[in-house]
Amino acid sequence: MADWVAYRVTPSSIGPSGERKWAADPWLTPEETLEREDYDDAPAALGIDRGHQAPLAGQSGTPFAADTNILSNITPQGAALNQGAWQRLEASENDLALRENIAVYVLTGPLFERVMPPLPKADERHRVPSGYWKVIMTQDGRLASFIMDTGAARSLNFCDARTPLDEIELRSRLGFFPRLTKRSFKDLSATLGCQN
Image (cartoon, rainbow, N blue to C red; front, side, top):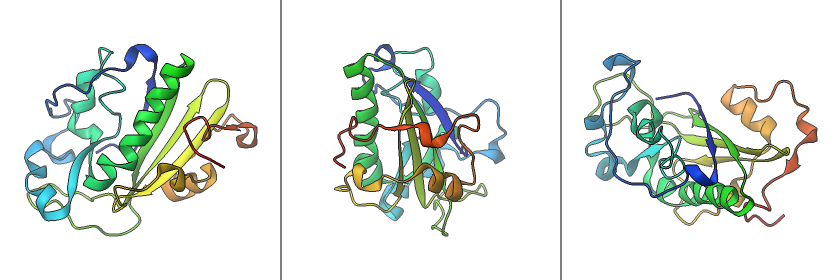
């Protein structure tokens, strides 16, 4: 699975999720990525879904829609998170792009902060993420950032998962926007539906 992904959502990129045709990543060897069958029994055994990092609905209007179903873009994500707060946050990204007729830029990735049970059918060496981070930004300098635990309840309000960008950098061990002054970002969370 990818350590992080970046994607852009525009009004024309958004559409219905459509059919999921899982595919191996042509740039990776079979030992470097999980396979479709590795997720079999994971929902029942671990409460795990195949979670898209770059979501299909935000890319279905582009030539890259099928790429969102490449297995290196998929991570083992808690089903309640995937179908709850994470899905609602993705919908908010799309709503923002449509409402303001703008491009929304997103960075997202997994966190590995504690040991999680492995996928029962996987024979590849792998780690199941303990959580996920997401940074959402607009070209005019608005930003919102979040961390959610993979075991989060379906009812979690994504606004309650707002996290300072510096903390995401620390916990993910990644550096974002090195040429920009982080203090210059305006808060995007209210535009996504969060109350301060």
